[in-house]
Figure (cartoon, rainbow, N blue to C red):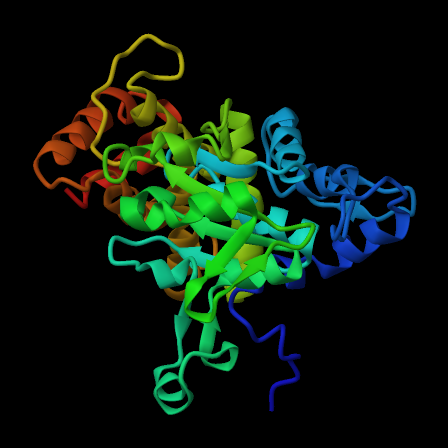
Length: 365
């Protein structure tokens, strides 16, 4: 019989659940001014995101590894009447940062609208319980509030993921909400006015540019923070290592913690192919069609750990990550395969301490 608590049995906890002890510790020492309806002050939110040691001795783990100024701008934006747009390449932690901002500011990261090509206005405004609507006619009881409407009513943050995937006419339903801080409900001849603390965090990736461009009217309602790819090999390696450790615990993988050197090799491969140049700047490289994001590097390491745990001796080696690298890099079976083969022969083969990785990857081609 399992002795796990209900939360421990959940595969992926919400940020406010997983880091509840950190949020409580921050509340206990937070004496800085808080904007209306915020659970923490901007200072405490920054500390939660960037990490640090509190005066009560509690260590706060970093949730974002990068420029602190970007997080300060994002937090400050949410304390104003402007909405926040997190923009950048896929895998640059936009959704991750969005979730943690909502968890720290509102104590609830679950108010989410997932943008898709088929989304309708009701996802951003409200829908109807049609059985009740037919039986009783239009009424507040028949109305089904969207996450945005819920956030308006309760003065919290709401997240809109992949805003540029949303059709333009649906996007524009946000304009009145963001500019007037109100959601009209003409069927009931009423409106829902935003309580203090309401705001929107949207994400968009620049690979979707041209899919559904934001109108100039909507762009003006957002402050945009561009999240870059990690600046250095060390920074990206630290991100991958930290996330892999957390995911390994959540998945209960019986593998040994991957060696830092193995993670660095995977990250180096991704960075060099992404930049079209080796780290020393001496060799130019062709770039594959995929983004080779940090998130994909995390996936490669996790897959390698699973292979090592269940079909090896528990220690992740080159043979365990080779298939993950192939899957992440070769998205186009013709163009990307040429890029990968050329990289193996001109870069990986020539590095004396990468011979095992070269052999493992060549076996799969």
